[in-house]
Length: 534
Image 1 (cartoon, rainbow, N blue to C red):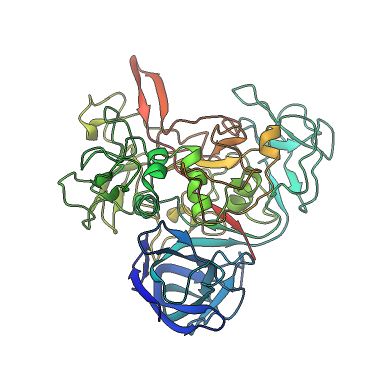
Image 2 (cartoon, rainbow, N blue to C red):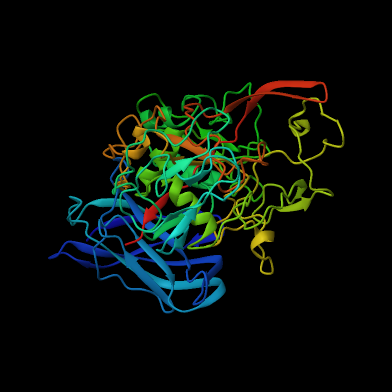
């Protein structure tokens, strides 16, 4: 009989119960992982956009005191709770669970059972094994054609190659076939952006590059701080060294993700228990109020995780058996299938630019916002961190930091009010930058959309996905803006930084407004992953 210990893993608006192991089959070397799962703001619709939200569920295990491994789930034989559908991935790395009929609201699915083929993973019948079940909220983006580019004049916007000047011409993505690139009709082209970049070389975008025509699942929210803590706490010491800014053996309550002298920017991740170099990994937790008591209700677990570089994001994708998003998939996820685009639109379907004046219930699971009195552009205000307050033309007092993932969505909010894309994905305009694989250079076009296998290299980097842009970030870029740059950049078709290479966990700033010059740093880099639909 296998001896198992069980751990609970949770995420924003998502709860997974203490899992149990049942129905061990010694002859066929499998056992069922049984758990309950529930989450808020779930839906399935039979009308436009004809999609649903789901949870990507995977299992991690370790034998004795060994390292965490990714469990192999069977291609069939899972038991779906009443009212749900369970769709396994072909590679056995996880399953999607979602509503089986149309509806909306909170779902409570009891007694899900996933078949773990422990024999395939080399685990013996009588091994002492520790397991944990992890879930990530996702949104299904259905297959179908769509337009890239808005028909406007955003920086770097995609256009049909027939364009020469004035308003651009939206380009139709009608299949996953090769896309010719060039400055002639019927080819994909782009308006030169402020950095002098355009569409890149006039070689075609290969068939293998994920274009967004084929259906895929996208994370409903950016990676949250609680999710990144779960990730860090499953790594070895040496892997943690690579995936954090400070050494894991630093004193308890040391900020993990940023240089101590830089602004905190609401990143609550700290070292809870120091590790021992190359031996025992650190234990991380959230402590937004820095009172030394970790993972309290108000410690910011659901705030979107900033201070992530490209390597951090791709390592998380690999660990979760997901993958990065292409910039063509970004526009599909925002705009929807065959929706006629319009200039300057943002991910939530119009040109309105909303601002926050402040928040209430800060750091809690129900963190809410106070809207600004006027829809004007705000400037860097660091008063929360104790720096000088910039007060010029009424700019002081705006909340200039990452916020709780999904903060705008309520039971009565519409698409604009909730900040949702056509498919219901949250905060693709604003909050934190969305990192994408670009079509603007050869390195990006080499991307073929392979999925992670759940395992990292000994140094904590993604491994085995040679098509992904590497840790040097060449082939990656930025879309969707952030809390600090939220005007032009938040437009769905703005590609000003679509070929921008950054390996740091923070951006450097040098701004001048009304006689004020500010030099500093900002933690505006987040990440979200996707997976091609089974």
